[in-house]
Image 1: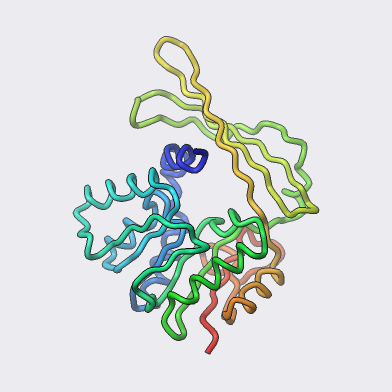
Image 2: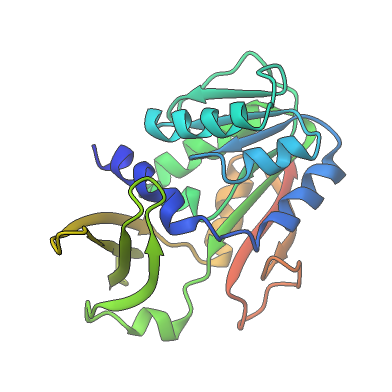
Length: 255
């Protein structure tokens, strides 16, 4: 299953990604209540949020990702009473708790939903789990014109990595193609792992992500019962503008 294959290599690719962590820590602290992370993956955010004292529920469809998250939580001594992990589809989940102070959709998670029906299903489902005036924060890639013009499928080198499970060197490449009419970014991560005998094991991780524009996202949130309080353009909480690398929507449930 592609989802679980991606989960197996997620930490290898994103182990140094923490530039967004202060944003989530600040927002969770300001919310002052239980946190729901939708698409929690291997616990990249769950663990530091739990270590900061927050009570969380992490939801993901991949059992491989959740197993990795649980291992991290157990190793850090985080009790199950503080962090609950739930395997479920973000479009259809139903949790006993309906009083979350804030829900997080980090790092392009919503872009895995390719249709308007699925996008609205996620947003409406999250709204049902938030307390009155509860917050929803969605972190999205901003489709700037320069990036969209690079649609020839060329291969880019990203980084040299080390697989901590095998000790082997790994070269990370990627390529992407853009379908502007469908608002889709078809992305492939390629990981070449070099074994001691000189053989190379190649893993390809395909992702298809539906990208959003500002007013499209505002309309979706409105139809799902949210009011947008702010749109941030980066993890330092600067206002969104045409030069921003991200679109981070801070919304709350509409009375």
